[in-house]
Length: 215
Picture 1: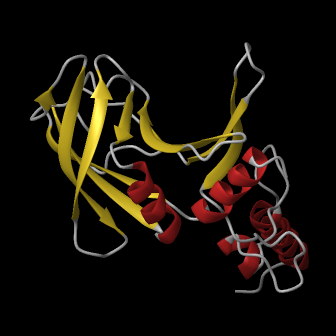
Picture 2: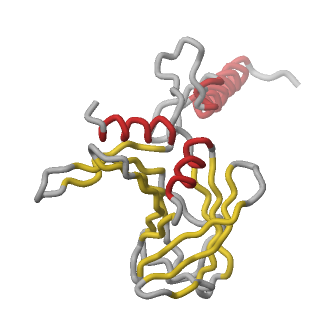
């Protein structure tokens, strides 16, 4: 059967219109925004390129501080502290948000140095030796991947601070190590472990000592 020329022309026009509509549907940007261009590999991985001047520098987990000024004498103590850390295993309420830092201080013009651990709230420890006004805590500490060592700490009643009984020993280990794992026996939580990053501790402690010497 022969199709009239006018019908052929109409069929061609309809075909062109349908094709145009389909192409515009696939090529148009999403509603409300432009077409997103694919990112480069470095952008997707969030890694700096070799020529990126904003490439990260070596980080430190310790910060130097001016710790205390005696208003009576004007004498100053300087110190440093570690990054804040939480337990390696989350504890239940009310201890679920407890965090801790290691602190170091030295007195200007003196040779006094001290190290202690400050918690965000009073640590509720058990298996301690109760003395007059304070508790003695015998526990274990691991420096880097070395075997655990026995350590003695003290805590004044209701204090947020747990101090090293032997400051010189602890400070020497802190300066020479990259990490410290502390074990504590916490009420209603059993054995709890806090891991502290010691990266940059030696530099921060030396800066605090220089300030104590007035340098």
